[in-house]
Length: 250
Image (tube, rainbow, N blue to C red; front, side, top):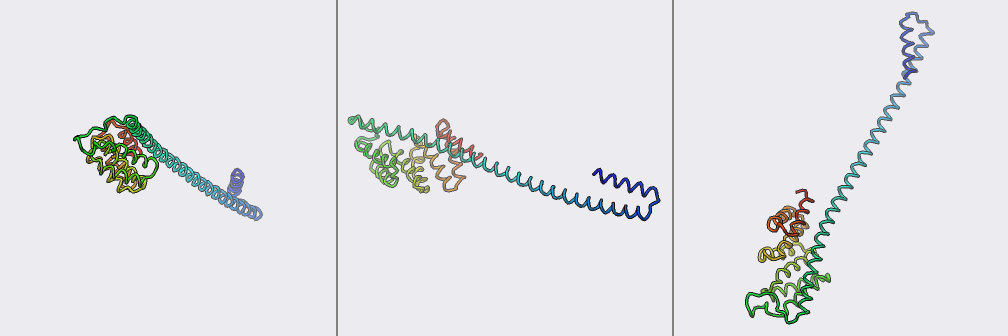
């Protein structure tokens, strides 16, 4: 740029003197041509650099967007995994509690079965707990079709026993594992309608919310999660429901 300034100043001084010769005129024309060529080259070079900078900035922008997308995807996966861990932990505790109860029954064969409302009802049949255990064992082994059949038979045969809500619940969970979400929803609804005070009622609502979520019915799923918090605010299911709602940004 200093070089261009010197040339321009020289031209101005020569013109100001008002006494240019032919030789000087030729020289001035040559200098002007040289200046124009250099300015054109400089302009082209500058445009090229600007274009490259723009391209680099666009690439950086795309990389930043990709990084943010990856981070968001990772966060969503973490949230999903945390929710699943909560549910698995709860189920493991439930398995252990129910299995321990069955083992206690086997150790005390003379112990009376669970409370019943009327003597002589199907609940007085001493086999009802062992029949339930057979169905529950099938579920734990992953034989979900077999578990559904056995739990259904149990419900039909021992409708007056206290394990019926559990049977409906594990029937629903069996359907969940088979990805038959519509039938799972129906099974969980049996508990919600008939046994709202059962310990399985809040869990049935939570599982039903998951079933609706799997069928892409987010509205029904969200409604059920809020209902758990409203009806069973001190339950573990309410804690899980709150976390799920936070993950949905609700």
